[in-house]
Image (cartoon, rainbow over all chains, first blue to last red; front, side):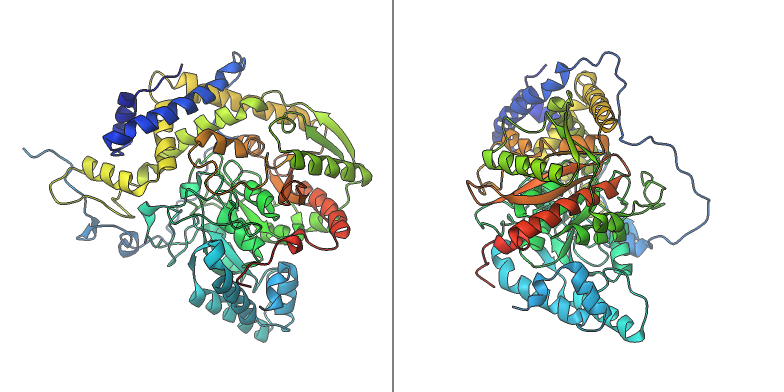
Amino acid sequence: MSGISQEDVAHLANLARINIPADQLGHYAKQLDAILNAVAEVSSLDTENVVAMSHPVPMTNVFREDIPGVSLTAAQALSGAPAVEDERFRVPRILDEE
Amino acid sequence: MSDLIRKDASELAGLVSSGEVSAVEVAQAHLDRIAAVDGDVHAFLHVDTEGALASAAAVDAKVKAGDKLSVLAGVPLGLKDILATNGLPTTCGSRVLDGWIPPYDATVVTKLREAGVVILGKTNMDEFAMGSSTEHSAFGPTHNPWDLERIPGGSGGGSSACVSSFEAPLAIGTDTGGSIRQPAAVTGSVGVKPTYGGVSRYGIVALASSLDQAGPCARNVLDTALLHSVIAGHDPMDATSINAPVPDVIAAAKRADIKGMKVGIVKELGGEGYQAGVRSRFEESVTLIESLGAEVVEVSCPSFPAALAAYYLILPSEASSNLAKFDGIRFGNRVGDDGTKSVEQVMSETRAAGFGSEVIRRIILGTYALSAGYYDAYYGQAQKVRTLIKQDFDAAFAKVDVLISPTAPTTAFKIGEKLDDPLAMYLNDVATIPVNMAGLPGMSLPIGLAPEDNLPVGLQIIAPAMADDRLYNVGAAIERELLAKWGGPILGMAPELAGA
């Protein structure tokens, strides 16, 4: 079930939006391979009739009355942003130039 | 150095409320202690001298006015740097949040402020709470006051070290797989992970949302209970918060009577892989528990050996999703935005520059475990193992009132010893992880020093969900006997720090 290559790490890093330098891919691949070998132990138990559990307590949707409350001002919400313009988060370009 | 720093939180609260000592004096004594020894210990990432003295002065004004005070008014505290604090830096031990100042308080912080607890500053931690040694902090490791060359546990090593070095009588930690209990064990302090949902997670930066829980750290069981009572309770801002009365942990800590109780030793948590001195102190505490009139039996939890593997699939999966928000767009640092790069490129450069290697490893691992084709074999299977772990606990608690084990397999190890071996590091939490998987409350209590290295050993006590009070009853009963045997608190045996 295991076996993770440098190419796999590069692909996963791209999906996770982390720019891992090429010369570190091998190091991560080796460590992740060892970890994946260890966590493969989850397959050692018989779970054929076991229901998966995502959460330790039974979850039900929580509703509240729709009453306006105090919330952050725009200035507060933007106070930690790396770049701001016109009371909005300023982001790098999101579309290719055409 | 003022003798105020060695006093218990309950004692300090009494002195402040009676007007014998001002809260400002208490805060100043601890700030002086931090100034003297934190250069060596490095428990704090940020000390808020001004804020601490101001909130202490506010408590003193209430004392003068004759206002009703909370059980911990005027008592200083170290706050793990994962809780959002309005106007104070919150870094999670990460470069990606270096300099970020939240515009709001976590609910736990709001409760502390309302109770007049004096927040001294923010304590060091493994980056985003990933680790068992605090070595993964981007701002350098914290040192164990028992031996400065050793780790104070993790991820909440700053919280355990500030308490055990007398920089603060109280601290707040968070525990996802043992990050309150293992640091308590290796520093000779007390730490409790409450029942999942017992303490609000609102404003606490999420690592693994289904496992994370904030809780109290202190130097004795009663102080831990007092802090627990201040921070616990239902919070409408946290959808997983339990809407039920908080167990009376203070009364339980004062009861300290385990006569007639049934205590289970978890067969799978102990023995091979556990240091000899950890085992011998654990066996002594079993004898002690029996001498107090409790019945001790062995119980088996056959799925526990797979808990570590399941945890290291569930945690990275949840973390890879939770940490997606640290992309340099809405808060934190942004790297590489020179006007020519796409948002994806800027995010990728920001995250590569902002995250340390352990965080990157776990995000990649989680991304892998959640990817199509592997999901059922990894994440899905781990969730089924989680069910089996819960069933093991349910079966055990049908027979006994509480379960016990060593908290950690070894005493504090040397800084650097396991840093390049992630799997060896993960093994530190082998006994604490099952508790998080099932959402149960757990305590680590100091039970002595390992004879071979004179370093503290912790006993883990586990109770059913929402029976947190049992931890305090059992812990206080054992503590009373050990204090009598030692002739004082275990931290009295720790070496004096050079700065003191």
